Figure 1 (cartoon, rainbow, N blue to C red):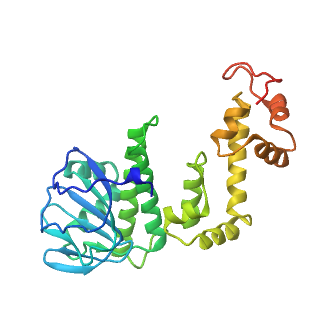
Figure 2: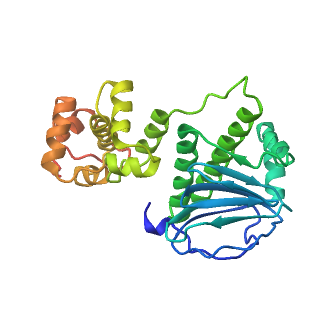
Figure 3: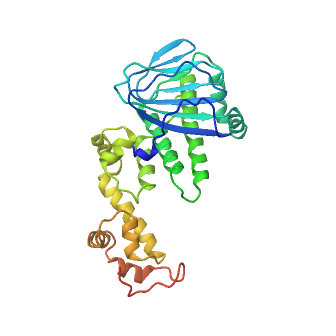
Length: 301
């Protein structure tokens, strides 16, 4: 994960926000925190390290993807066994008022409150698909928190609700094993991530890092579902986005750089192969004039 998305660890055990806070921590030589309680809900997602989680005096050895749901007033702490191994985790805090408001608006979140009242069910194991779905939403929230895009606050709120819904489904499935929930597949999660990051450098290594899945497995998933490689899929999505931008009169020189093409010759060849026309020829035939200004048919990239 990009360094800017990490939070500097602090021992504060109170919320600054009225609704929720999210932190991604990664540190070496972590100093253990004493057992403590909160006045808010804590959602803890374990990523890496050598860690036990102690809650109400009981310790559990954590494995990657474990989720721990800690309600207000319950004593707990993480205990690092080997501080020479990087300790990585995500911590989400939500206020009681925020949780109550969420439950009032969407009854599906009611199972979270019921789960918090069950003292035997703080620790939940996730399957790879559920973990990838939760982790993808966490990454998106952290990127929004560290950016200044239009609609930033709304995007964070929506992703927070989606993440809590994933956890609600996890809780419901654990409580109703005879009716397991159908979780979002890795394939669907990959499609969503690629579609929202077309302007970035996307590689199998990057996707493997984000989703914690072997890159060869990711390549296999795409080939199996679409019968084309992931590289071909990303190329088609980028070309489609470029085509839409051209139809709205955007400059070719800005279009291809905005969607991940390194140079114009490479973009030109790919575009003509996909659509049978050069970018300029395509815009000349189909561009929407006067949408964002006049389109010059002779304009050069």
